[in-house]
Image 1 (tube, helix red, strand yellow):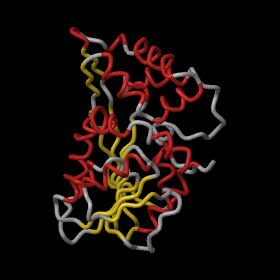
Image 2 (cartoon, rainbow, N blue to C red):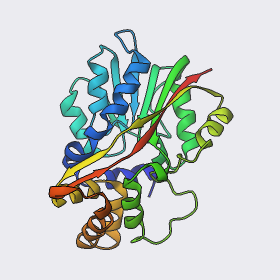
Image 3 (cartoon, rainbow, N blue to C red):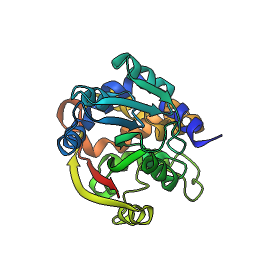
Image 4 (cartoon, helix red, strand yellow):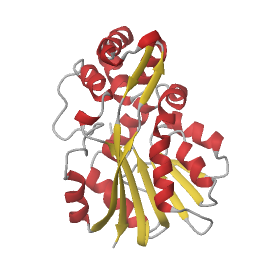
Length: 261
């Protein structure tokens, strides 16, 4: 099964739960990206891995011409409801269906690390950018700076060890890794920003729904069963439980602003 098909199915497990419990947590990162990009009516924009389309909608409000691709049909269906007039396609990050130099801006939030080959996905993004175009990538920070990582690690323990090179949430988070790959790809790092994106869930049910709509947990459900994954999520989340069933996890995301040379 290709990465596109496998990831698409996993991320389509519970799209409405993603919309409600997870997507809003990325608003600080989205706002920082828009602050750096300064989009307007003259800009052609592609969101690579647009998910349920919140950032697309925020970009559309600037007047930019928006386009999006995602491997998950369930999430993309929500994007289409939000932006019915936009070009939104089920496609792969490693094979973008656009001509060379088609866009002024390409963005990818929590998406490029799930490509079968990050390097190939990066080169595709570069290809469809105009000269001096901007590529914006938002990824998880290092595991030590993300409390949700402990829960995802516990869920990962329900699975057999993945083959070397298997993409995952923290595949690109190691210090200096992104910079090294960008240099090889002939891309220039303009700026790098650390953005706080905490996760807040009210009650155990919300906590479980939030995690089970993610691909790592969906995969664990396939390998075990839903009850086991829910119990694992709840147990691993106890250190982040506050009074009255409030769960709060501090997470840091890294936002890279990159230029095509």
